[in-house]
Length: 213
Image (cartoon, rainbow, N blue to C red; front, side):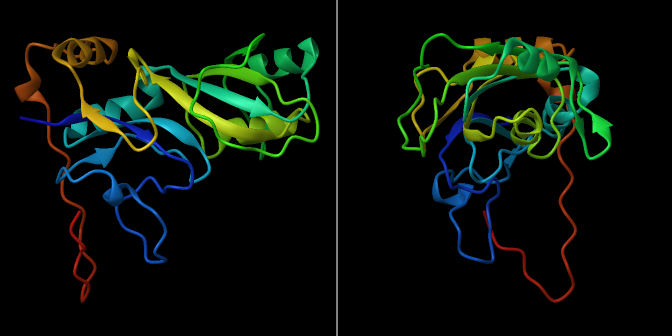
């Protein structure tokens, strides 16, 4: 049976299982063979990752065609005006391309997230941002484009899946109800998981042995 895991990626951990520079990776936390992360969080970001050995799920979670919303909490430097929030909602231009419309709200109260110290020279409010696309370092570049650098970024939901009670470094299998809800959100029949294709193995480079996960 395929595996479907939820993991709370800590700060300073790479979203991969091996690293030639000896930096912290998923291997230090997850010992389930054959699973891969559906998308990435950059090293300095935290929060929810979905991992699986089900290639169709990995594809649909990350492909913009399926418009699966991802919810983030972003702590920014300075208090954005309503005009700046509206720019984020409508899309900002990054490297010549405009980002897709997003849901953006300024939170009135600090959210309940695992504590971590960040530099605080100015007011550092939190934004709740919902995206249906996932370009590299997108939220950090979006907030910087309107003048409010992101100090901390935590992903709290992927479609119907949420962090719940997970703490940094913890993981668990999806419950059957969570699995069914995810399948429905991705346009799949939850009663027929056996029809899903498996992720093909990555080609090996000649002369190099692929490290085990």
